[in-house]
Image 1 (tube, helix red, strand yellow):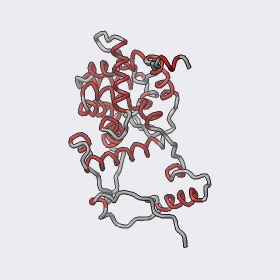
Image 2 (cartoon, one colour):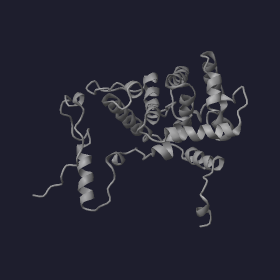
Image 3 (cartoon, rainbow, N blue to C red):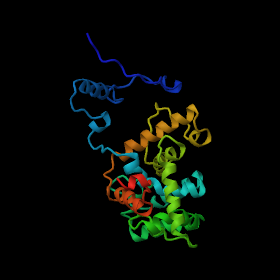
Image 4 (cartoon, rainbow, N blue to C red):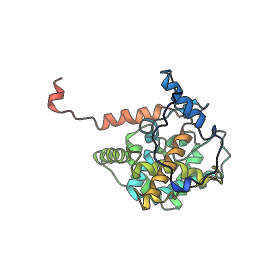
Length: 273
């Protein structure tokens, strides 16, 4: 009786080993085994998550990062706590609006595409009352002034002049800083999607699920607690964004526009090829 060996995996954290036995379908056991059986037979197989109806495959770099990069610029300017204040002001403002027919996460720049003029004005006014607006305008100036299709351009330019060279440098450094989803800046971007849901009260977590200390990502990066929290944030973000029908226009435009603003410099020997 030849059986497929169980893939090597690290042991689960101690706090997770106390969970009661659960339905294997709910926890992906059946899908997991199906995937490896099909792979063993050299048949076309998809990862378990893609086998669920309504789930779209999304890439962090290609799709998610362009949607979240505006928060990355804000974090670079004023820090993570300031970024949470920015998002909290938006969510509190939207609570007075009619419920949307589709799920909305205001950590994503595409969430601002369908806002009415009055709704945009309400968000700007909320940031103004909170004393956040000028820093937001400066932080987002590369996207506002250099990217025509940026959904939050309604925020307006900063009160002081910023050179194009500085804006190109800032967006280049911001992308480089957030490119790795396993490092703190990238982890926090994933976490902003979860924060938006928590602030809106639109997410429910089952009582038997152990919630890690999410603050550990910032307060003790690299620790066991931080790694558990990072996995929790990434899993939530990837699962949620897979349920959206995101328009690919902005991500493609973002990367193409970046190549125009900051083209790659090839060494001399490569230019002659």
